[in-house]
Length: 185
Image (cartoon, rainbow, N blue to C red):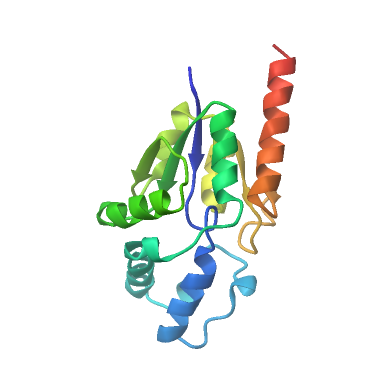
């Protein structure tokens, strides 16, 4: 059975929070900075659900206008070198697929599949690792005994997950897990 890695996009492969913050400020200048977003639903005091998702969709439809974290390409290349089948997964509308694909290709980000839906957890039954920033996604993966990790942010850092400052640190962690598994065979 192939090793499958489910890799999030926003706040995993690029700095979505900064762009989201700038867009929210246009609607509500009282929005606190991302370092103050200490819970996943930080936005509820400042925006309606409709406005929040409208802003997110606007960003996703312009995905190809944004950069990536400096170590994103190397992170994915190393996962491929570890023989992972990479499923890039995001809670996005299917209509944003073209902009998302364009962005992945523009930045030479290796992947095997792109999954856009409102529920990426449907991928979990057959995956080995999940890299995400959402505490809900990480918790669900952990409950299914899947290696769950991600980049550390204010909204996920106090939830007991193995989180890191960079994708390079995550790949080191995953490499050590692969080495331990190989040793124990």
